[in-house]
Image 1 (tube, rainbow, N blue to C red):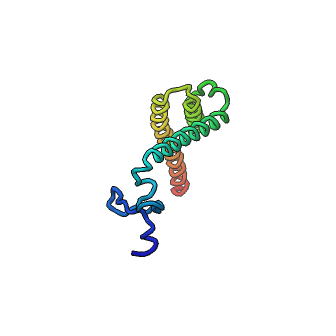
Image 2 (spheres, one colour):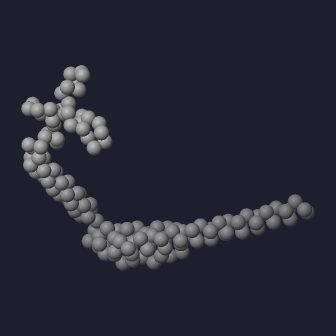
Image 3 (cartoon, helix red, strand yellow):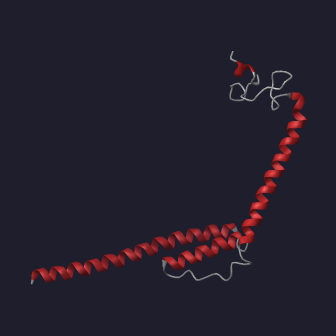
Length: 144
């Protein structure tokens, strides 16, 4: 056994491998596996969880502070991709401010996907129609 292995905790992890943490000065277990230090570990974990929740809450408050007071009135969906984009941006903003429910946002997103597909089909049909007219004009020109 090498010196590095001898200084490791002797506990076996749930995966069946040896713990990689350094062992305590007394005994062969690390702080995490030493049953005499269970209360200390429990306290450390609770503090860590509280700290994480507090940090997440603070970050959320900072993000929300960057947003203006309200999302404003809902824009019309419109019949173009830029108008649809503005509508979706409003929905995301309003959901972030808590002005619309998450379920409503999900429904709006589904609607936006459907509309985007329809807009794309419409635009492709217009392009195809224009290309067909151009091809017909070229055919007439060549046949003269």
